[in-house]
Amino acid sequence: MRKISVVTPCYNEELNVDGCYRQVRALFDGPLKRYDYEHIFCDNSSTDRTCDKVRAIAAWDSHVKLIVNSRNFGPFANIFNGLTASCGDAVVVMLAADLQDPPAIMVDFVRLWEQGYEVVYGIRQQREEAWLLRTSRRIFYRLVNSLSPFFIPENVGEYQLIDRVVAQHVIKMDDHFPYVRGMIAYCGFKATGVPYTWTRRRHGVSSSTFVRLVDQGLNGIISFSNVPIRLVLACGFAVAALSVLATLCLFIISALYHRELAPPGIPLLIMMVTFFFGIFLFVLGFIGEYIVAIHSQVRKRPLVIERERVNFVPAASPVAPLLPGLSDLKVERAEGRLDRNTFWRQASGRAALVRQLQPMLRKGGVHAVEIDADELRLQLTNGARFVWDPEDMRTAPNIALLDGEYKPQELVVLSNLTRKAAVIFDVGANVGWYAIHLASTVNKTSRIFCFEPVPSTRAKLMRNVLLNGLEDRVRIFDFGLSDQSGTTQFFLPEVSGSVAASAKNLHPEERTIQVSVLLEKLDDIVEREQIARIDLIKCDVEGGELHVLRGAARVIERDKPVIFLEMLRKCARQLDYHPHDIIRLLAESGYRCWAVGDHRLREIDAVDEETPETNYVFLHSDRRDELAAIADGSILSF
Image (spheres, helix red, strand yellow):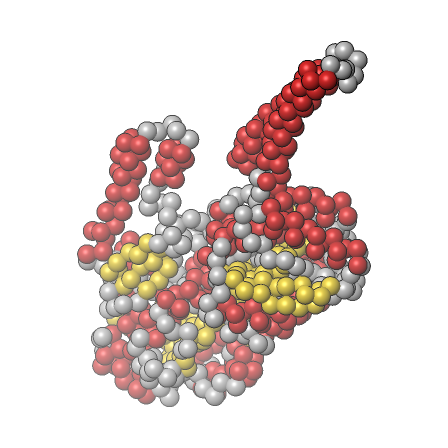
């Protein structure tokens, strides 16, 4: 499922953010529901309740993210910072919180993007504003285009949808006073426009004062044109030339007519002052050229300084561990501290570290490592493909590469249990390791429902589903399951990674990030989605398994599904229960428990401190086929 990012800059918009959020959510619940999305509110240190309102929304809707700046850094810097924080396949660069730009136009933006346009901009064909402002804007746009070496569409602001490729090029410009609409136009990608009426502001007062508008206009002219400074240079040259010409004329007139045009010495003084003033402007123009070039490179202050981020999980660069220090070498080469041959020699030596991956592929389940500018991927021997993040060290694809396999015994058991399954619930789907493997063994008409509440992990899950062409068979939900519906905080440890996200801090020795997630009951989902039957529930939620099962009581009673659980005593202890409580709960519903060990399944009645297994299969007494498969050992064959 592809993702669209919507960036909304804010400053004292407490009367507008609720309406803006509702209209965007309605679009992605309706005409754009085929897309995942994130709505990033970028607050420029509002003095009203804007941040409180957005925090409250973000607490129960993980699609909503908030960036709070330490002070007001201006609208363009705020918008650009939101663009750099986005991760969608396309980005709506600026949807104003005051809704003067109508959100409904985004449907047309997306439609044209799907047709191949990389930039789709909104054209403010009509403006509900004063005549003087309309006229001033018209003059400004024509002036910018007359001075610019490329075309900047008239009556177009930052309300544009741009493809991820365009966004990456805009971000690379690293302009510390970004004129975003000009930067997008500068890229020169395939573009088209959608006309609309720019409406009056309904609530509050705009922060765009006349002084700010003039400042933005000057920035737009200076950022993409050397014409003004070259006009100064040309004027200086012209004035100097005219002063020389005037001096010659005076001498000629004096010689021919033997008369003084002014008291002695005055003409010469005027000519000298004019000449040197022209020379001064001429030199100043040259200096200005150098200042413009130096200014663009040297002024490297932070674009904005952030005070807070909500619902963001920082993503580590996956390429750094492969090629340590290579980017530093490139900086040294660019700054002239390394000659060409030394750079090639040292960089080649570090790039050669990639060869060390090859022996790991020969005997393991990973067939190939794929590298491009945006991500690393692993291709398994069975053809499945996964995004690879080497720094998320405990995630399944990484362990599969390092160890040669990841829980192969569990995969065999699950695959045999699901051969005839029509509906599978993968609770705690993480990056989709089990879901994608099971999709290759079940019937082509089977459906897999994945539940992953952590936004950064869910993004990898979505990407993996797309990589394997399973978007029609695997459905992803952006919330977790429990015995209560509502919002809670998950702890995401920095080292243990995405597989250890939990409602309790299971790794206090590590630095953790708190993420707001939404939880719902499995029974409610089945009723809402009108799912007639569930054949298997796989649940791995770092200690929350008992709560998931309590929230699935009606489904367990109705369908008697196969249940595959991870039960860790240390995680259960943090949530005030023991794995034996799960065995007892399911036994009351007619279930028997088997521990999944090394090439064997053994039936158990209880889990104690000596129990070595961590994964368990629960079968209802009515599941005759599965019970027979365990009895004859075929459940372990593949």
